[in-house]
Image 1: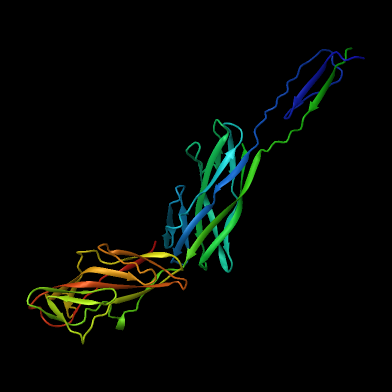
Image 2 (image 1 turned 120 degrees about the vertical axis):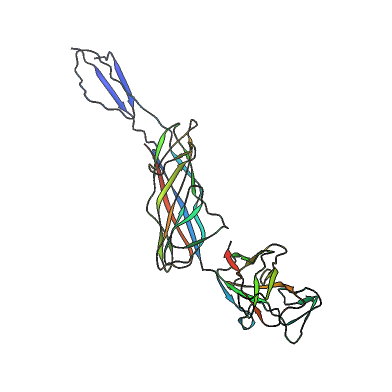
Length: 176
Length: 183
C-alpha cells in the first residue's frame, strides 16, 4: 500500500507524547529545534594576586574587580610591581544568551607551606558592565561575544612560607 | 481505514553547551623588610666636633662621609660618621627610603634635653644606596634594590645648621625618623 503522506519531523529536542500507526484522520504535529552556537571560552589573563609582604601570623587579601588589593585581616604590605591582575575570559556563543559560570575550590600551593585558598569570588560581566558576583553569570552580546572577569579573596593561613604559590584551576561556563 | 505512517526521524545533534578552560593563578609572598642600624657605635649620623665661627655656620656631611664646614671649624681629631642602615628583604625587589623633607629640620638639643633652648638643626638630608648607588637631590626619597643575598645598605648624610657664633658648648643630640618600604 502506498503511503499517502509521509510526514517527516526533524528535531533535535523533540518531545513526542503520543504515537499511533492507525489513525482515522491525518494529523500534524510540530517539531521544534533550537540550534545554538557552540560555547567557547578563551583565557585572556590569569588570576594573579601579585606580590605582598605579610607581617602577621595570617592574613586575608581581597582583590577587587579593578585589581585593587586591600587587607581585610592581618597585616599586608603590597608590592606594586609586577601588577596584580584579575582573571579575564572571552566567550563566544549564541547571541544575547546568558551563561552560568562555575568556579571550583581553588588553593594555591607551595612546597613546605600550607595552601593559600581563594574564596568570596567576584564576577563582572564586562560586556554588559554588570557585577554578577552574586549570580556567577554573564551574557553574550548581539554578536555572540562576551567578556567576564573574576577575582576573589586570598586567605593566607598561619604557618605560611614565603615564596611563589601557584595553581591551575578550571573555570566552566554553560548556557542557562 | 487509512493508515498513515508517520515517520519520525529524530536527529541527535551534539552541541557544545558548555566550555571549560584551565587558568593559572599565582600569589607571591615575600620576606618582611627589616632595617638595622649599622652606624659606627650605633650613634647614627654624627657631625663630629665643631668649633663655632664668627657668624652663623653650618656643616655638611655627605653620605660618603665627606665633611665640609662653613663659618665654623671641623676638628679633624673628632671626625664625622654617617648613618648606615642595612636592609634585608627579598632579592631583586626595590624599596623606598624616606628621610625628613627639606625644611623639616629635626632639632638637636644640648645634652638631649628637649626643654633646652640650646639647639641645632639638621637639614638637607642626603641618602645613598649601596647596590645601585641611587641618591636623592632635593627630594627626600630614594629607591634602593635588594641584591641576590636579599640585602642592601643605605647611607645618610645631612647638614647641621644654625651653629651660632656663641653656641653653648656641649653634646647636642636628637632623633629623626627614616622609613623603608617595599615598592
